[in-house]
Length: 494
Figure 1 (cartoon, one colour):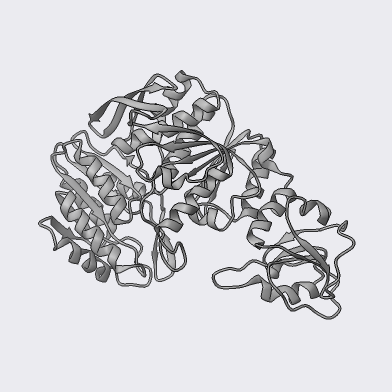
Figure 2: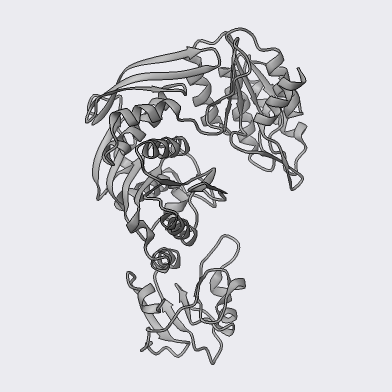
């Protein structure tokens, strides 16, 4: 592909090497688009990206010597005296990378219905709900999210919630080639801030909710910045779908350029949930409700709580906008399940056991509060905390479990380079601020076994923190450990 075509949608200035002269010829062939200087080859275009640990601008001289045909920069770089590469100066190389990548892969988003979901909670579950609904209606839908990337029958482990723009465009290209006609993806605030999701316009952008999160030195400077970054999606989509019940919705959507529709329990929501009822059967929890407004239907969802209603409403609205029928939507909701997100595992007719990814105090409080609405005989919480992470999280999670669970089993999560018992004692510090009863069992399998063997009629047992993860990280090594396998082994041993 020619350089001039890769730069078509960008504002830039191009120079001949380090001469300072404006480049006269941009009609040169590019052999590859690269942002890792170790992969630089003859004729490539190299993007100088500033990362947390390495600045690609420092490698400009190296890639020029390797024969790069073009180098994209946002600041001055050192180049060899005889550099023949075209130096393209842009305001932001990450932003440029998104548009260059889109062009390199033939603008795949133009051949897909694209749905982007942002918010503090609910992104993962809602992407799977939407995927199930659209496929129930005959679409072939790709998925990009926290757990995995799905392209047809291929499942690819995800490193980031929202991949770098080059990988994102490559995934969409592969989806188009595999026959997909739509893609649903999680769009993180970090991804928006770093322009990973630029280079195309989403057909639908979704806002689930927002609470303070991801605020720190390497993330967002404060809550206002976090909200601003979330809101960037709604200047990059045609139709926006937003949670009308979230008190920060107006702040997040400030300056939006899209057509907007809302969902929720609020009287002014465009798609409104009414007649909410909780379903509680042995080994299963759920909700059912009716909708009114832009669509009227009855819905039943096999996951508990009001947040399950919000996830479902959001998915219903997306499916509605894309022309999916009521019967197809209702059928998809009934069978929608997400690995590690309030995932029911049947072990007994007497009590309910579930696996969830809740790994911070906010998520654990939300989950346990929701389960309280089902009036369990006892609410049992089994969890640990990750090593080499904030001790404050451990204190907070211990305190939350002590307040909202009837009994807590403190165990190990991913200890990494810390001793598991040291982490567990930090959790205990928070627990001791409450009157909650607890026990400490370091081995996670033994902790789960204790919970199952001591389960009573009407109990709800939550295995929190690991969710979809199928490993335990100890001293830098990831050992296979899937809670579903542990449960199976425990039942077989019984």
